[in-house]
Length: 319
Image (cartoon, rainbow, N blue to C red; front, side, top):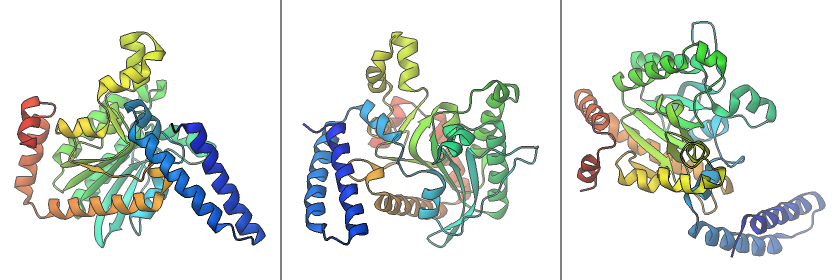
């Protein structure tokens, strides 16, 4: 049976051989190909028996494509706009205009950081009130310029620090949700990795919501649910299953509209194909949404969130 240790060892061996071939001029391509085939088979075996907790860990994988590098791979001419015009800026929630397959859009995205310094500055994608007020500012610009809004969600949740609470993080989230729901432009969300609680929904109350295959979307983390309901950290895998936080059950409930396939082993194993799949899915949905008259789009959005979580509504959507 495949496990993380054997897969990691094989990944390291492939990387070592690649380095030797690049630096020493020795042709090791045949050996690398054989090892990559074995690695693919191990990943496929592991993938087939993944639990919900395994998918949570993939959503948190440190090498998962996310943030600024993913935006640059998916879109063109991204121009970041900073500041909430009230005295602050938050690097954990970023955005600005860009081009996607020739279409002008406004992008909002959580940025978790790739280096230790960036991760500390971005609080691993946990935004403050300044971040959500900046998001509202960018939504207003999108509406004024008639730009569709694309939100890329990847956060454990909003930042829960004392200063964040003092500056009314709950109010900022509520205002962001309200503004997203009222926008007079097409809106689309993709859950890239973690979609945690109000920090995610603040920019995800859109016309359509897509999820990467190994992303998660939940009101609370498995660790938090295990601590509250089971009083036992060992119950975290059980909590992950009970929360139904992965893409297939959320699709059944009608809370998301499409699952975007990832490479075997997770998005980090092939960032380029991941970006290609993401771009295609986003482009298709934006094209469809842009063809719907605005009055009808608003009515559909109202119906979607008025009935969110309804078992009957989910059954109607499937049938």
